[in-house]
Length: 514
Image (cartoon, rainbow, N blue to C red; front, top):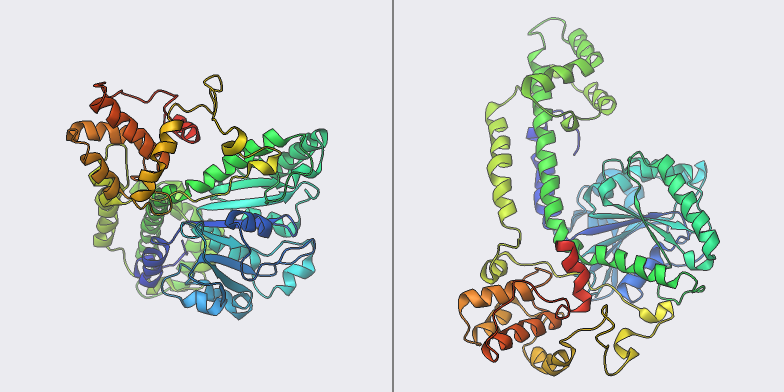
């Protein structure tokens, strides 16, 4: 939130927030020193090269690159991106021409980019020379993107754990966004198990000194690109770590709506606190004489001013701006020109928090929804992240045994595997989009079974395991199995699915829901 002395009159900033930030796709911001594998990680996610890609052991990425989905491959200059009405980059022009000349968009057709936007940053080097030669304030640009990002990934090289001054400054500006930060210890397959333990401990120690959060950031360990592991000693660990990271990325679109509402609430609360501060400062100014002296006294006594306002209006300390930066802003304006506190605007803000925001939360999918209400609300589709078993020295699971898994293999056995193969053609005939049947299509299939509405509601709740309002192939198989059990065998609908009926790929997701 920009610290504006008259926040309620700054409509353009609110317009940009509501009409650009709110509808925007979730953003993933990648930060790290040079040659830690940021661009290679992006290429691994996309499964292909992209325009403007530069990969090498030397500092290759010298610009901020935004990867967006589009019908054709092309690069978009930064000046055009910053004024594009449909993209959430309006406001970057404040950093000047020097920055915009080092900012570009890379448009590429990608199923991943249909759901998220990736932001690649320049590799961070050591030394004062690089900071001075950038021509723009690197940390402030990172802070701008961090405020709008849904996930911030800090990448570290297992061979280069030193945290340079500029990287430390960059991590410092991420304060307040600790819940978004995930760390990656990349290229860990190039060291042995004993060295990895030491490197991992050293990274946690460095992060503990650098990050002010009392909780240690989640660190994913592995080799995050498409090439096979160079050392298979820790292959099982790396596979588990990569699955966890990819799961975080896959469900990002679902979490984005809640995060944006949370960000909106934070901004409203901050604007409310700023309005009270501005109103108080205005009310303390003399009518005629001694205005400058009174203003200087108020600025010097700002801590007591904050305490007075906090106590008078029952506000939380976290809603107030930073004392030092706010005092600096106040010294540039005249208090006598500030507008008085508007009770109507405060009431409007309270009404938004008490009525509008709860109504907005009701629009999000929940477990109480029926298939009809889920369809009306719309559901976010998971990001199709890569899964490469061969990378970890294994055969692909699907081809490991052409006859499937035995019941003794509880982790991989699925009682409906034969039904899955048999129903694949009928599933494909229904015209799935991106591997998913729309809510309406799935509903029509279930209605044709002739079961009652109450029975179909129960079957939907059991079959839509990830609660996104769509059926993928496996969920479709589960739904058909339940319908057949009721119609052909007269069995009651279970209150929960047996573990053997749940697709192996969905079991971890189901465990997290409970």
